[in-house]
Image (cartoon, rainbow, N blue to C red):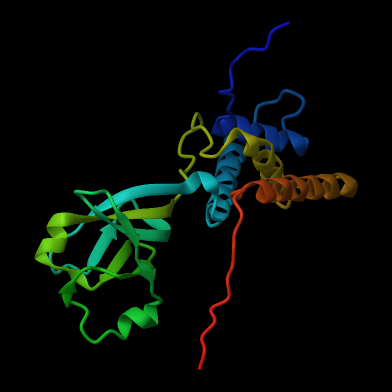
Length: 231
């Protein structure tokens, strides 16, 4: 017997909610979920995904380019970025890229002249709730703005579940963990009668999330070298 050759399996929002409630024994006998239950399930699902989205997942790492403008220090990132992991300036003609150093807020604020023009060497990322802004220093000179662009590696926000037929914005391997953790989050609102089942749901949710969190990392080795500064 041959395999299907298909690897596109996914679950939609309504299916994830239904499976989570089924673990709790709600709707497991074929009865339809109420409008209130579906709404509670969708809200809890979005809250769960928002919490998970704060972690640096491999699949939310995204690349983008930013066009430099002479004398401009602040660049609004749309759509909003969760966190900027790396910024590089790229020479358009050669494609050569050079990383910029990351500053803290205090380091950037303490700069007396934020509008000095030259080749950018440092950046500060400000992730506010309404907009995320990238600040660079020095600001680009006329020649820099013409000859270079910025390349960013950043963490994007995971998509919401707005409709009942929305797919999950995560790899297929995370679907089971998503279902069980949603059931665990819903259990206080829809408690099960058997304490042993409640404990099983919590342990299973924690186990699945732990397994995937350990997998959700780059396999490449990291080498650390001490900074030896002689007097």
